[in-house]
Length: 98
View 1 (cartoon, rainbow, N blue to C red):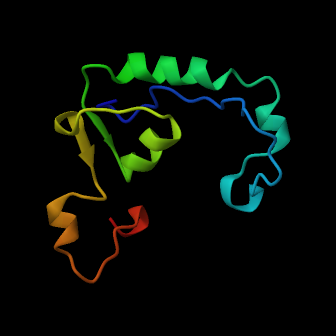
View 2: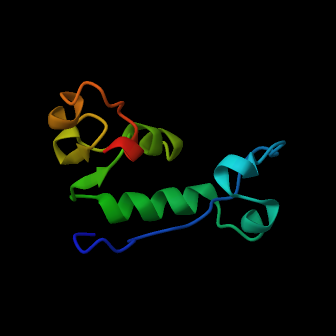
View 3: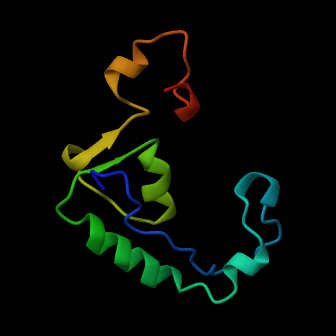
């Protein structure tokens, strides 16, 4: 939110068997997924939270794709595509360089 507080955090159960959690990258282990809510439930909760709001983040297309959600471009502020950061030239569009 505008105060920098996390608005929502959740894991979601998978519809397919996970063969590699890539824990070294994701930090997620099978323990995290035990008892996780259904994907559709998490998707619905996120849809309700962002409805009619401006969403700010980095490379949001990845999050929206993973959640199978669409959000109006006019209500999206994506730091990966923000012109002042793109003009920096020598920096990549990675979050750690912003």
